[in-house]
Image 1 (cartoon, helix red, strand yellow):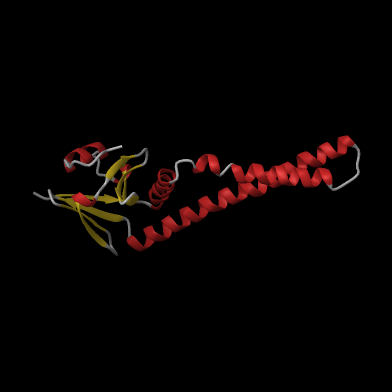
Image 2 (cartoon, rainbow, N blue to C red):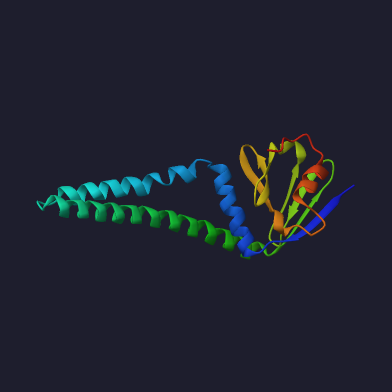
Length: 172
């Protein structure tokens, strides 16, 4: 017996899903991304403090200004990378359209959009990650598909969908 779910994905939901997928793929990225602004801040602080022969008070002010300038440059790179991720998610969403269809039976899972159709056997799926924003299917250690929880019809929850698949796939 085949089961089908049709759901709508907005551009904002596509962005949220893309950000969560980055967080899932690189769980320590949130902490590692702070390394660059802090390192740049310390580098600029050192440059500003060592590059002149001013009074100690003025050197202290220059050090703080240098740290803030370096930290700001690093922070801007973090903001820019998030903008690129969101822009890419919106571009893919625009090409694929808002409507998605998922259907499955005991053998396969099929995912359809306006521009693509993908069919995969359940044996290929390694695990299912039930995140805050979406449900993510993994194949070969990489995210194969993400389903936004808010896009599901009102009468279907993500947990019910996972249970309906009834496959021996670990849910994490």
